[in-house]
Image 1: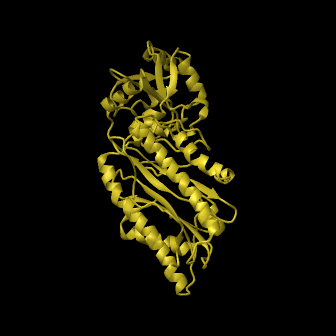
Image 2: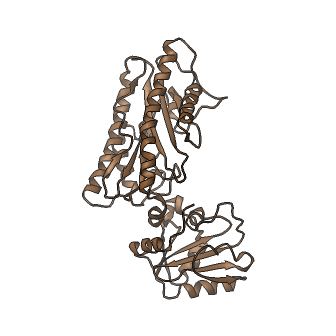
Image 3: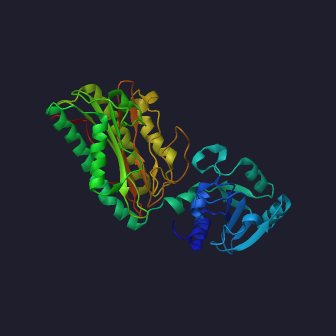
Length: 396
């Protein structure tokens, strides 16, 4: 965990125009708060606590007398409670003259990833005349922003995993032209071996999907469940990895190929639509930042989804366009999503996310995934420097 930086947090609160940030947890219900407050997820928390960070001045801790020491590593005055009335009295006192606080709350539950505080607790805080606003963008500023060291650590990984996916398609070519049996699982294990050679970490083995399996966004072969790969099969490979360094961040891409010398039009046509959607979403972000305008996650999803819908395949794009990338593969920043949720979080400098539109037909699915990084000065770049332009003819 990173060290707790009160000055940094108070700077973020002021930047967002809030009077303070009120953290709440009950029995580990708010993992976002636990992360920011440097409390291990396995902490044995059995009672409610509040931690209030005002935009200026000393924080306040409200802790149960039974477990009063959990927040001792944090700055601020400790206020103990034992019964319900003492808890509410402390809350009234610390929120006196406070007009607005940020909490892990999402209006209308538009962004469920940040909706960690229960409705009753929100009602309680509002009963004191305090406006409760979402901490979604504060969390992004605190937890989704990459350091320069993280970017430097990620850059070679982004380049290498593109080499690995190309090597995986070469492996398929060699096996098929040699007349050897080959399965999705074999290709998956080939990639895992390449990760091991480079001392990379992945939280689960990559996706290798043939034909109809490529149409399942979350399919992955196992030692027990897999399909063989034959000539003239369509193959999707999705792989993600990072270094084993502390606080390393992820690289995550998806490529597709056809096990033949010439790619049939039915595959090329779908890929071209998906690639256009991918590129339109990337251009949209680039134009917005170049014009110094805000851009939010749901807008990027719209940019990609509109391309696919206009091409007549909207019903087959049943997945969000992308996800935040941090030390977690699906990070705590903005997701490119106006489908599963409406992600209204801002895209921020020094953050990263995937763009991965797809068309998932019954017989095959196409996804093209790139990672995007926004530099500290607002330049938008695709990491890895190698964006797939066409379906690879694997046997050519």
